[in-house]
Image (cartoon, rainbow, N blue to C red; front, side, top):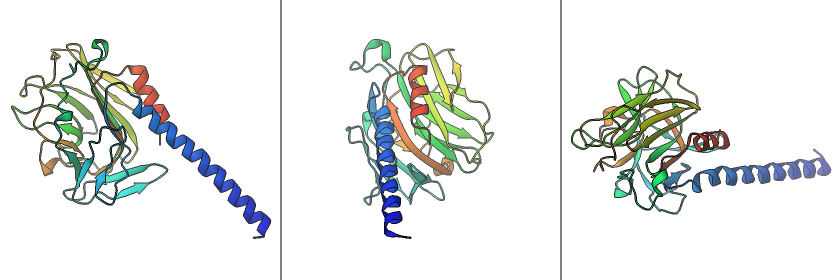
Length: 253
């Protein structure tokens, strides 16, 4: 390769990097400007084995086992393969859905992110959860062995309301979101498809004492998800359908 050709290739590479940096900043921006944002993790683990929180709240996630970082145009973490998941014990995630620092028309809970399930769990595996056994149930996004994803929420710590998605295949990145709107409905979104339940929806959520977990459910290693996660977020607000779709389109891998 001649010097002129090498220089041109280098310049082209520099422009591609600049474009990628702009897109990365734009993708991050769609998350950090969300109303009621409690935490956002792009999921590039640091050497300290922490998933660093990027919205400024400082609620980093601690690695249990080994959750190596991967990259395919976006950072992500590998989950499963033993007792490998990430978590935080902070009470900040005990969201009732009635936080007074959120305007009343927006109160609720919305959480989710991008997930790739490598293989169907034996029973089910946790995507994002803060829930234990009765009377300490809270909320959770879980992957079932039948290919559906379920969002469940509890107002009492015992009884739960839930809604499931349609069946979908594994080994594909999917944008999964659960939303709780007090006294109104719970909803699950998978790649833009929405399913709802509006029956007996509680007025608020139980503040479970269980740790907030990504990649595990029910404080139990039997329910660890084998897969990948990135761009996980939690909002103490009920985000609109249009905003959830904007997040999905803007942050598509």
